Image 1: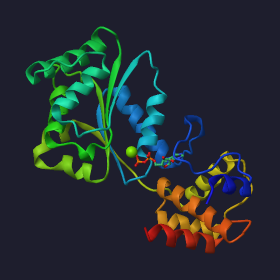
Image 2 (image 1 turned 120 degrees about the horizontal axis):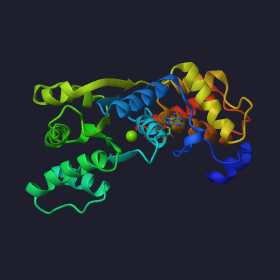
Image 3 (image 1 turned 90 degrees about the horizontal axis):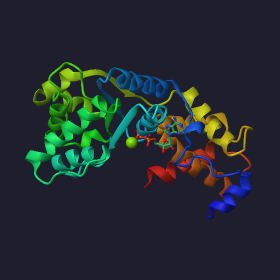
Image 4 (image 1 turned 135 degrees about the horizontal axis):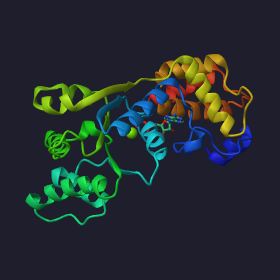
Length: 271
Ligand SMILES: Nc1ncnc2c1ncn2[C@@H]1O[C@H](COP(=O)(O)OP(=O)(O)O)[C@@H](O)[C@H]1O
Ligand SMILES: [Mg+2]
C-alpha cells in the first residue's frame, strides 16, 4: 500500500498522525498542559520532580514543549535519554552538554561535572535543567550519582532542576528504601494518563485538520473504538487511526466507520 495513494485518496496535504509534530501544532489536552505546567514549575524552583506515564502517553512531547518554551539565554538544558552508558557515561554526558571535555578518571570526572554545574549558574547566570528521559532504565548507581550531584552544593540552593521522566515503574522504584534520600528531594510527582474519550475525539480531529481535512472523516463509533483500544494513549491512537485509514481505503469507503476501525484493531492486536 502506497502512502502516496492513501494521501491522494483522502486529499490530505500531508499524512496525518505522523510521529513528529511541530511545537506549534501540538494538541494540548488537560494532562499535557498539567505536565508542562509542572515541568515549568520545577525549572522555576530548581527543584526535582518525577513525570511518569505509560509508553506513548506523550511524556517526551510534554518535556519538549516545556523545554523549548524556556528562555535559551537563561537556561541550559541537559537532556539525557540513553542510560546504557553507566555512571561514567552519565557524568560524561553532563560534562559534554556543559561544553567540557570529560576527564578520564572517575575520581576527576565527578568533581568536574559538579564544578561545571555550579559554574553554569555562578559564572554564567544560567539555570541548569537536567532531564533524565526513560529514567526507569537508569541503574540504581546512576540515580544515586544524580542525587549526589544535587547535594554537591553546601548551601541549600540546588545546583539544577531535575526532571526524572519514565514509565510507571519509575515511581515505585524511587519509593524503595534504597532511594529514600532521592525520594525526599522529589518536590512533585505527576502521572500523565491517557486522554479522555472527548479528548481522543478532538485529538483525531486535530491531526486530520493539520492534514487539511476539517470535515468529519472518522465516525463517532470508529473514534470511540479507537479510544477504547488505545486507552487514550496518543501513540496508539496514531497507529490505530492510520491503520483505520488504510482499512477504509482498501474497502473503498469514503469515511472511516466502525468496521474500518475494527479491521485496524484486528490488524494491530494481531502483531
Ligand atoms: N500533545 C500532543 N500533541 C500531538 N501529538 C502528540 C501529543 N502527545 C503525544 N503525541 C503523539 O504521540 C507520540 C508519542 O508521544 P511521546 O511523547 O513520544 O510518548 P512517551 O514519551 O510518553 O512514550 C508522539 O510521537 C506524537 O506523535
Ligand atoms: Mg518518551
